[in-house]
Image (tube, rainbow, N blue to C red; front, side):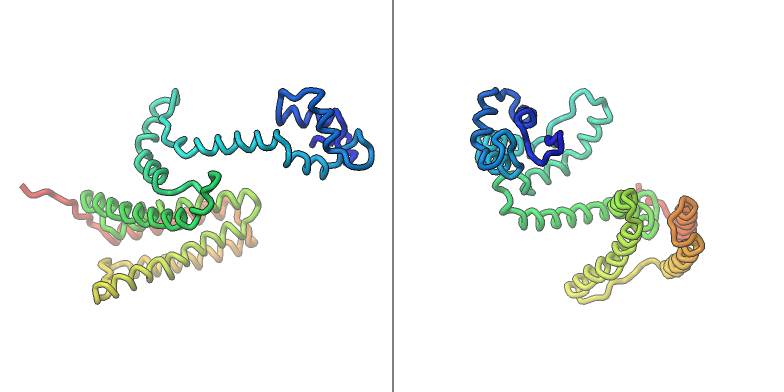
Length: 282
């Protein structure tokens, strides 16, 4: 802090250092003028924090810094579209792959952090939800095409690629809160997101489809019930393992849970064997 002597006030030297960080070209006359403008009562060589704050928010320095910040934010909207420079082939490959997504989001979703754009917050929220739906639809369609081409059943694609892809945000959020020592929040976030997917993410599309088509949704996987029972059994085993670890998430618990996941994938893939590869007719 700028109160180097912990006096609860700001003296002339401390004010000089503070103003030099805000405006490097400040002079002694500027400091004297600022001290005279800030002073209200008490020692004229000691300025309180309230006096400094009141002066600063009405000063030309504040207006200048505010203008610079607004100009900087005004140019940020296209920053993600600028090609990489001198970062190698990996950066260019990443830029080309992400360019369609970044471009559509940049030109269709207003950046509410920019000055004067706060009124568009609701529009940005709705547009973001729409784009999530569009990208999710494309992801499912492309995954199904790849699965049909390689002869991989849609159940296996859903249990592997789609499940892993949609769970990456949950993984990242759980890692962040776990590093902060919030283990309960990490576990509840993972459990809550999956409960939401099952009790809301599945019924809502089914209701819309059934209302539009006047037909029930047919599940084509005959062995899906086996995977469901195996999953429930593994959940019980995971609870038992955590209980045996004293309700602590240790490295051993993580390895055991990862091992259970591999077993679940193996049995799900084995149940769908043999795969029928898509063969083009000539």
